[in-house]
Length: 279
Image (cartoon, rainbow, N blue to C red; front, side, top):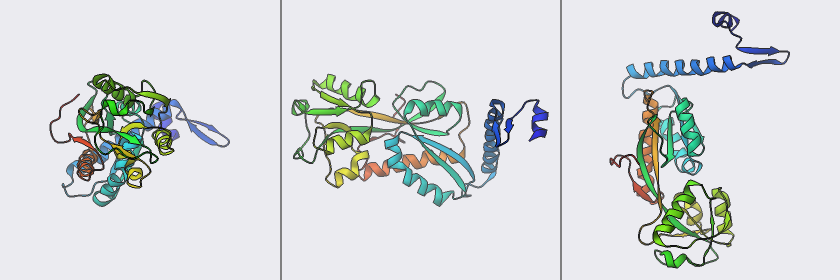
């Protein structure tokens, strides 16, 4: 390590009696070294046969609720097809995921329909339909609900400025629906808990609540007419080649999305592989 410091002419670590800590220069070298190792693994992959299990590392970022849906199936696919590869799954909101994609800290991300600019290559994944989510203390609605049916209901929604809240408000404005929002919470767990306690209703995608609905802790009703929805995108950096492992992750995410939609777990219109276009 000292030879490398001498070669570069910088100190890579601050040394003290309890060990050493990387300097800013050391962290920069580590980032570059990681990219070099990734390129080496991609070189190996590029000359390997299509059926050869790959080694290397891939990092996939997803919003927390999407991670709950996809992670087990994604990990299972990697363990079966590329058991020597390492997979890192990162859960965060879209703004953070975009930043990490641009900085090269993750290879693939699932984003809500944000405008990402020219630095990312995006393909549509699914238009996720939102539904009325009700408490077990009230009888489930027999059919689709309209704007008039939700008048007078007490709602719990994400805070103003949250992407999901914006989708719901645009839908309410377009349909003339009245939303009586008494509590704002940006946590799905909090919104779910409030509704399950019998204190009100919310508007959310069904997929993250599938287990609670199946267990009778919540119920859902679709909206009549144009329902609120939000689009999810698959994104990769536009300024770097996408590795074979990253391409496998993308393909597995698309296949899993279609499977979950076919099973009725993920409600919405699947766009993967349909040429749905960029938003």
